[in-house]
Length: 361
Image (tube, rainbow, N blue to C red; front, side):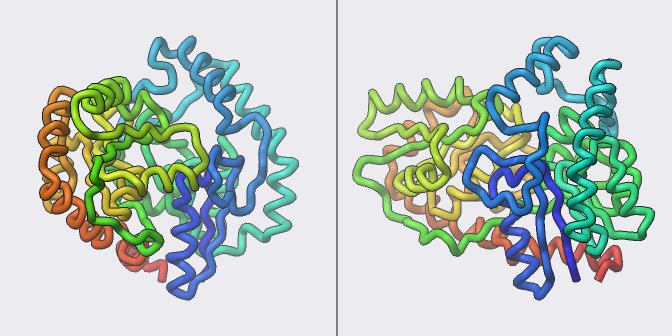
């Protein structure tokens, strides 16, 4: 069986993990990205298309545009709908995407022929986007009777909305974000895959406890609440605070591995609970501190997380750093839990169960 993933970028390396999981089951898996990620993850076959980028300047200009169209929150404003549906905010925006699709088609159509992209059996359309904003490639897949799955990861469904023509032909929708389960009438949960074997966990506690925070986006992670608390604790207790930000992924991993506690997020601005940042830390054997709303805590009742809010973060951390035995216990729980739920072999079992239910196998 041949499986193709199409994604704007390989944001946190997940595409590489799915490729490995599928190949371990004896299937061929490839992935195509539209542009380079900001980090060192494998881009697969990267189209390097114009007028789209992970560059900070591009993202800043895009946010300014959406602030003009939608108000202060800009592209961070949540859309209504079940599911929310993307529509251009203005005639100018509609013309922009029409022009971009036209410009892109010169390269995309060559690649479709060059790589024989219609020859796969299953297509995973990450972010629910495909190769064109108007959905023409995915529509053609449907006409050819191909199996189509869409993967949603947060802002794509929460703030942008589904691309209607793609949503209409998608036979399987999956997400690792629990809040998105309430934004689409036909979507299944799938834990984020992770290769837990790549890290040897350290369940010992440093003599001087190290707490880290590693935001990819300070707004979404509630860093404005987290950083001052950690800096205050570093002044009051015998601990070290490590802010991991804007460094190469290899350096970020090394810094994280040297720590005992990771604070993921508070405020649930970018989704509920936790993401790949925590999954990676759990595999390393770190204690993960994050905010889990009651619904999420009930969904994963055996979780190892230290549950906090912005208001309880200071006192929870203060009590935690005084109890090394408790830290050690959480470290072991972290590793055991992430292997059970997030190891790529176990997440692949769930995905292939979905395939079987649809008679794709």
